[in-house]
Image (cartoon, rainbow, N blue to C red; front, side):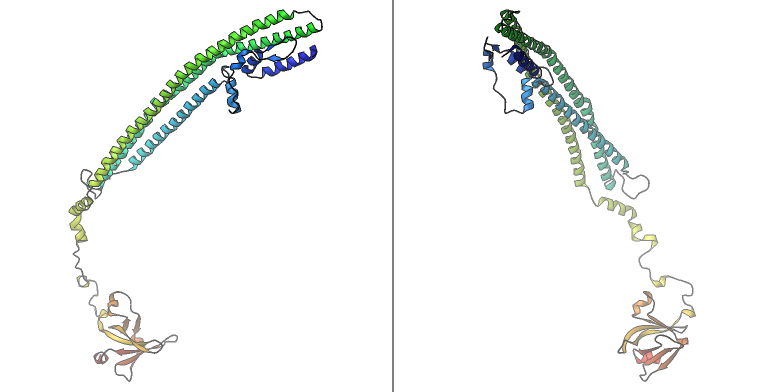
Length: 429
């Protein structure tokens, strides 16, 4: 391999390493080259490297390879940011929960305010101090007022306790993240810089060896190799420092996460205890109200109303319930113009086959003959047929009980009607 081709190859490798995780750079930097063969050999520390995690998702594998870098791709940074996002979700949830409590209290207060019972002003119900529907209404209203108080209690606890503690946890996670990055970040940056310097010296060493082969001996390859060894020694020290720092952070994070989980649990438990106590108070109030409803006398209200107004209901407007037509007087009730000359059962011929059908007839003093289907229709409805006999011709028929009424001057429609008295006495009249 010529000097120019070796330079190009090393330059390409260096550019690729600039985009690789520090773990890859450190592994490559830890390799040693046998003089003259150009082949890389893995150092003994590589034998203890963890197995490949090919089964993991690529993003997780990347985060694993970047653990200790204190960058956004660092597994621990990702973990702490996940914690912060999780606590933020709890914060959003309990903020919405508090809003529900607040809205419920507001809606219930409005409902209770609009529930104007006991009734104000005049009414016919028993007072709230006595058994009756108004006392039941007051019991219901008081129970829901207690509901409103419990909504306010849960809302206050959530805002003054739960949300404040969650905000404190998020701040603590942020501080823990800063502590981690402040601890590991400088070491990682120095290690990355050191790895780059090692690569630079290794490139110089390659140039020196290639020059030795072509008898261009401007630089001593052994001296450059010594520089590579010194830089690798510094790199090893930084690697060890990074591992030591990472292990210390690991132990700190284990203890801190356990404490964080415990406090998050306590925050949620505290809110649930408050809600449980509120529900128990609410259930107790519901039990009291149901007990009242179980003892409620459904006849108490009607008895109270009957005691006050029973006599009025039995004789409304002073009436006794025995009124009849004879009790009423009106003008011309006994006038001659309204006198009935004759009334009784009569038969009228009708239909296609001219059969006689019973009717009830009334003959007034003004010469009108009114025919009803039944006698009970006199006060129920108007007559089915009326004849003004002064405008008619009445003639007897062969049957002494029968007569015909002919409407004079009738141009259209039926003009002759045949009647038959129910008995001879009626015919005589």
